[in-house]
Length: 401
Ligand SMILES: Cc1ncc(COP(=O)(O)O)c(C=O)c1O
Image (tube, rainbow, N blue to C red):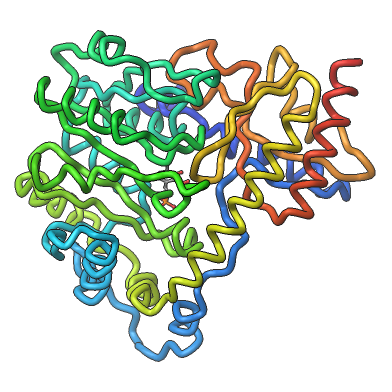
């Protein structure tokens, strides 16, 4: 019998570099090896109690669909949040609730590009941009940024060189996953000017907005939204801000009416985001500022432990991440994917090992990032210190074999 073929476009969707080694981690655990997960940004910080209490006290029955744009109370809470952080112009009708920031990325790409059109992104970039670009028939055109310059933006001409007839948008992640870079005011203004001059959308993924360290100033796309209402598109998520990854809530914020009307039509097609999730998350208005200051302090301390620990390993290179909870690290290996698999499949140190993500999948240019990994510092300091020691020993043993 002839094999029924799957679509050619399905074959274009890449495996996630963050998750593709999971089967090897599962096997290691089956053998009794403890695995420290530095591969995925799933924070171990507790979700605010006011949110979890909604689940504890749940009585609504049945659990119905929500509204397509988002539940009114949740939308009001979100508008309250944007007003609180200084953007009083954001109203509920400028917000579309999405099923995670992930759906926001997909909807935004679909909304600004026809099939075959292009968005520019600065590599290394969040690997799932490739997945959503493939799903929506969009091409990501990479512009290289380098570890030596903290993955900050190259000069304007290098970016403008990549703009062609098919370019529709520049997509940034700020603070950046995977590099931890926080763009300066000058960099943001350069991007805005490029988009205005070339009539492009600027799409800014700001799911790590609260994670900026060392008192560094942060410049959101929201600062430019009123001046350029049709061009600015914010992608956001509650996953990291409130340790709510499992609630699957994100949003698109824009003053572009045509875009928001279109996005709502897509949202109607998928009915609604989680009803229970939104009921829980609308309590964000009751989360105390002390929650964020504690989380912020913890991540900055983790960042310091990771940075100092890794820097002390011979042959390892990294810049100090300025924000988010990731870093791209150069290792003294030729093929980091092989090394990452070996860590799980063949190696353990006192019956423990580490899982990190090979960085090649965070680049759009084939062949880049081969000696790099992305590390997420989402473990407590004690575990982070252990994970660094394991990496130190593993690199010696790997390079001896
Ligand atoms: C940069 C960035 N954008 C978006 C997302 C999607 O997050 P979620 O779908 O959980 O909101 C993530 C998750 O790690 C991310 O790192």
